[in-house]
Length: 608
Image 1 (cartoon, rainbow, N blue to C red):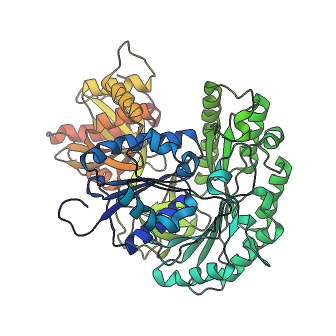
Image 2: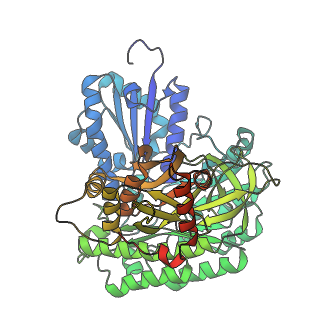
Image 3: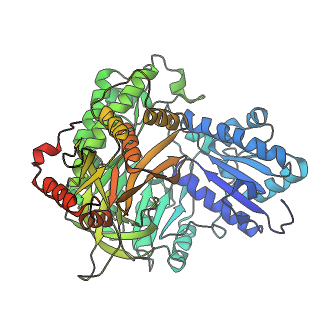
């Protein structure tokens, strides 16, 4: 315990899938029962648990990198308990203590019920370890779950996986399949609506393989549909080989089952699928897609894909690209093949080189981005029922919700978490949907952000100053911003793709962000005061988003280099219409007339 506090505090950091997220909820509930309180500040924590993922080498490396960061805390406070839990713990076991001797606790994902005793053992003995074997009984803690606030609740129906995909470490880290009693599952579901959870998501590594006596996943969907207060049902992750007729028919027949399915394909090539030992062909996979499209109105699909699997040829990769075009997924989680020790694929010869894998991944993501943009833009003007999750991750004043078909929509409005609202889509790009809340006419619903494009960079003939012209592609909204000559040159160089002998300041900023593994999520022109524009740059570092004050010219120059979207708050555009652009009223009027009379074709020119 730190300082004079009477209460111990914990911090859980989570990597990986929904199963890991739910495991963290279970551990938080156990710790709450032991008298711990949650904290987001590692300096304030008496116990830090890293709930880990080992599906790819990069995820595993992040864990050991994070442990290195925590070492200074342990050196300063020897009583701090640091634990590695989850799949990396099960995979690496005792070797974690050798690589990071300041770690106190190692626990596999099937040992959650032992968490309290392992913590006590670590405090008493200085070290504790809990790794499961397939013959160990598994406990599904339910009454101690500290669920994340929000309308959705995860419900575990099974643990482990009996498949033998040659690239996958999960059967080793999670063990063989174990199924919960359906009565225990339904008892958990019945408690959820009273706690504010109207959407449930059944979880399992191979969830549609669930069976218990006469019951299967289809049975669970039918039974949960009869629970008062359950408005939506989902399930993940599905294996195409276990997607049987009964489950597909339940998706059509059960009113609360949502019209979305995550169905990992992994490859579009039969030769690669066979090498992966996936147990199905491309034709069989597509037959499931075709049946569901015919029977479930408006269904959408997402998938997982691996590129660069050992032996994957150019023809095999092209078959995967053609699968994207044939299915037209709404979302794709794609990865370059990562060799996992102990798997069959790790012994295979002829893996494509690192650069080939990276190039194939870039190509696939570019193709999918085009598909997503087209599909999202086709939604413009349509209205959807949205279940409100709360405020969006970015600090832009927008609410965030999810449609039945699993599309995330941001919209301004006073709606509260857990409400169902109708939202009309008014803006769309490849990665986001912006909507407007359907409310009574005249009701104010907040300030929106409009994504804008640079449509002009030229010398204003009235003031002889450089001017950037931003335009909303979805409307006629135009925003002129006057900038300094040096900032204008920095923007012009990037637009024209001119490489300077020595990097410009904004190029250095981009390199720094890349080396820090940070990304620019967006830049926003936020305000106009006293003829001066203000902007924010939103940076994402390891899932944490921060905003940094900036001049609009610097923000735009950086956004161009990082390929990030440029947004303008709608009230800034309104302010600009009613603001004198210079101190001289006559000159300001001349500028307005020049902008109004500017030929649209001229906006596409970048003249300096």
